[in-house]
Length: 262
Image: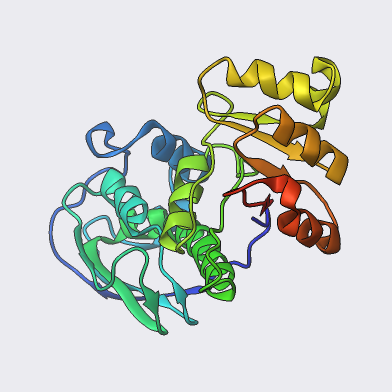
């Protein structure tokens, strides 16, 4: 997957109303995760000085989150938690669900304390834009290989702190999650191969762990060595398309073997 997906654009519409009691703006741990609390602390800090200066504490508003161009929506749940961390009584209505390929228009409606909504607006939209951009780009890749018996997998090249959300976005776009981290599967790279004494030696040592094993190969010779060692999955790393096609059609690959570029 690209580490710089095209970001979906969102619009923001709101209308004010007065009423209700004012309350100090703060993050409520009961409705917040440590990540959301940290993100809000980064942006809101000691307070939204603009809203505190010009928006009455008792003001309430209704707002819409609008998709401004066609795309796959992703991130509504985390956006809602951003707002409820600031206003536990916030009213939230989703008009579509994550994974929906939506046309421009409203995707969620919310109502609550105006200062809280204004304070959470940018963080919520940043998350929605980032995650929907990934989901939309993933859907384009999935559609491009439709009918080819091919899966689109993601990588560990994620934004620090956002891996779980970005991998969820891949799934919303129709992609398939690869390993989550260094702990749940073995992926033998060129550096591992060199330190282990070659492709075959690395594969045999990895298979002994009982974990899922995959090995990167850059040449046809390395593919043959990996197959001879029993590698169940091979990633054709930066291999020219012509060589990839040659290997996939080679009888040396054996029955049932399929290459996977990544």
